[in-house]
Length: 116
Length: 111
Image 1 (cartoon, each protein chain N blue to C red):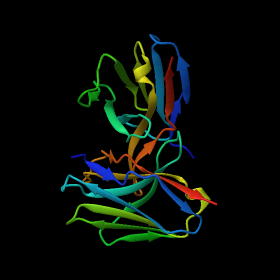
Image 2 (tube, rainbow over the protein chains, first blue to last red):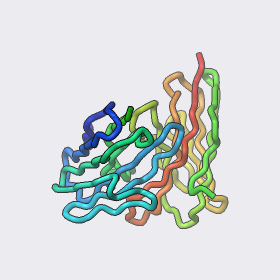
Image 3 (tube, chains in turn yellow, brown):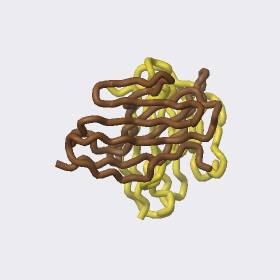
Image 4 (tube, each protein chain N blue to C red):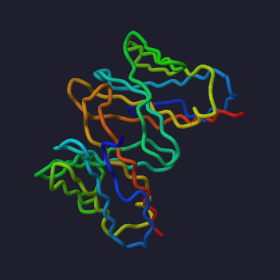
């Protein structure tokens, strides 16, 4: 069964709206979670690493004030896209690191964000 | 140079065909290598890890050449259900959870 739950799976909203995406670790505690973004026909690009109880670590070129990350508990991280614009339309995926078997990360189902 | 580069594709092959995907990586310190499969608008799913000695899982064979920093995936007897995008993924390993993804190569298996 799924070990990471991501919600919502699909969002369509107007330009200027803020959108919150949740990522939950279902059966274990996660001090770290990763947030990725994938544009059509492009690779998954790491946006930021979410750290429980401290500030997220953002990758170069990712605006901290635009993409707010909160990792308030060991099972939940949220990504808020503030004042979203059409260029923010993308596929956002979270993942949880896990060294179980050969799987380094467990991915959520992803959120397809469409800004009109 | 991009960190992980793959064949641009798309690959359109008939059922039963054998298809090979290639991938090169730029970080020679990379320790762990994977092939993931991603269906349209879905999360990536681990297909197989890639080991130095090469490894096989049913119809899938992965090879690694550290000297050339090259990884390959061979799919034999292609099925319609193999249609997806195949992602080459590299990790520093040694306790690091970080993954670097290639753009992926799209495969369409045609009846």
